[in-house]
Image (cartoon, rainbow, N blue to C red; front, side, top):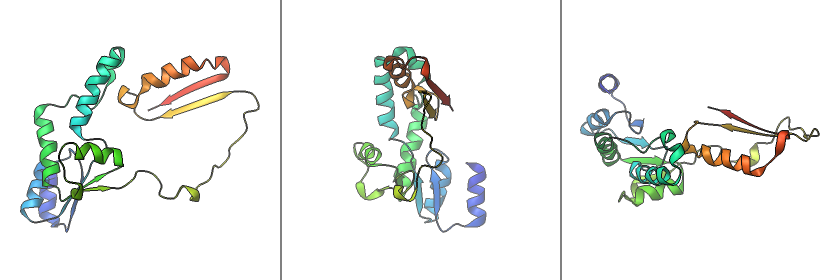
Length: 173
């Protein structure tokens, strides 16, 4: 945060666009200098995350050690709250994420949904698809390997589906 503040002082930006949790003091400096601040918040509000992860610990205790994002210190949560408060605009990825902010009392006018991914799916087509004539069924999971992504549910579902030996589950993360 200190190095970024130094850079902000040197380059005098017209706007600061920053991912959440990367530096409240940089945002505070920018705000004092009347620089518009756009905060990108890629996941649900941190208080919602804390509450849902507590429920997940209870529902699925075996996987509790692999939860991520729900155990922020009070200090860290306060800094995130301050970042949101100081931002002129908060970018969120979906209506769901926006609703978690609204539940925390953040005004709708401060929130802008910018969906993740492609904007026009019809511009893309599957390339190189092949039929699985050999009867194999392959699932590829790509992402963070942790319970916040619901890994236990994927593993349980794969097992319950009883695909037999013709199925493979690949995890990459």
